Length: 117
Image 1 (cartoon, one colour):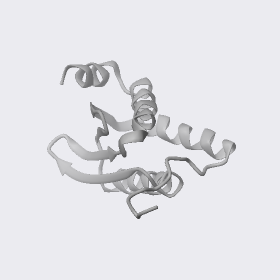
Image 2: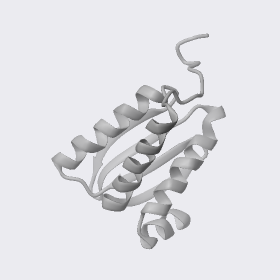
Image 3: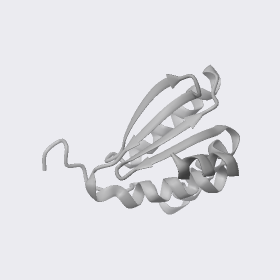
Image 4: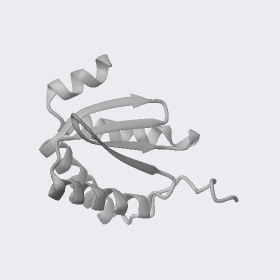
């Protein structure tokens, strides 16, 4: 198995998974202002200052430790901190789950924008 062929699996124990999902729900409810989806990419935009950026990066670094098949890219835009979550071809369902979680936590106008862009 090459470096680019990381197994598509999460190594969190069940109690860790519940806690992690709660962290994502709280984050999305607090500051998600945009989302966009392509088949293997989920783009999340957060209303973030430096402190919130640190918290977002720490959460996603923890997520990458247990789901090493995901990649995260960060950039600042006028709308805020943009995070791209990139998955390999067989991991689309993982992005589906994260998108669903984001939509549940986001305000309705954020969800509607994601459906129309």
